[in-house]
Amino acid sequence: MDIPLICNDSALSQKAKILRKKWGFLSTQSDHFQLHLLPEYLALEQKDDPKQGLVFVDFVSGSVAHRRKFGGGKGQAIAKAIGLKPGVQVDVIDATAGLGRDAFVLASLGCNVTMIERSAVAAALLEDGLERAYLNLEIGTWMKQRMRLHFGSASEYLQHHQTGVVYLDPMFPHKKKSALVKKEMRVFQGVVGEDLDADSLLEAALNAARYRVVVKRPDYAPFLNDKKPTMSIKTKKNRFDVYVKQAMPQNKS
Ligand SMILES: C[S@@+](CC[C@H](N)C(=O)[O-])C[C@H]1O[C@@H](n2cnc3c(N)ncnc32)[C@H](O)[C@@H]1O
Image (cartoon, rainbow, N blue to C red; front, side, top):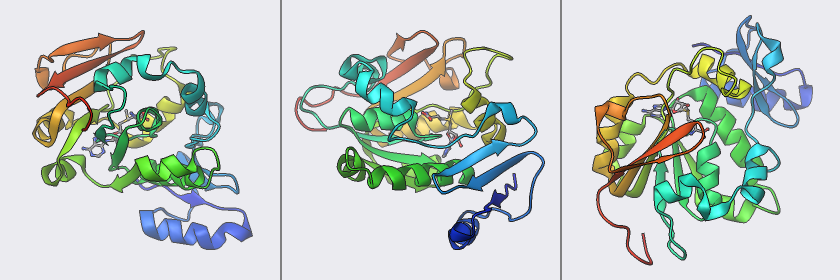
């Protein structure tokens, strides 16, 4: 999908030019989706449905920051699914980074996370969020150490990289009008589309992971590639299907 990047601030026009060239964004207006380069952040807008609001990545003060402070730490289902243990730093490839929320939870719990994202829009939003987080006094130091982004295909990346854990959260068609689907995800899904190749990603992930692969699914979705996991950890709306290859070492990943 061709997406324009709009910038009405003359102080940012050079940056807008660089971003258009880097990510292949257009400079013309669109009636559907468009990106806005604002002084505060880069944001995605669904122009034909403005009540959905702007989508942007905010690791410093958004809902993910709130979850970092008050979200239950290593007792959370995602931490149990990854197999986090005190004093063990786990290397994770988040092969379906999206807006980076799960990756940020894992990094804030101490994981060393490489995010892979193939959508130019998602990757540009993520890069913008990362740049601001790296400069932040409270989280900048550990964000730079623990969270990075690779733009490209995860199946290709996984062919050449081994890691402790691979995390997958491919886009799954949401139930129509579900109140549980956040506005943000609805807009985002419109741009990114469905991940129709997700089944094959599981095999690539299983080859690349030394210890386990964790797949996040809505509670009503079938197993990825119809493959039964070693165990499933359920939350209110989702399920983490865990494919264990071998036990994690006690004090090094
Ligand atoms: C449901 S979203 C992930 C949301 C993410 N877990 C979060 O917390 O924000 C799925 C994302 O994975 C990306 N994706 C899916 N398959 C991919 C692949 N094979 N390589 C790279 N990115 C992929 C999609 O472009 C989309 O942005």
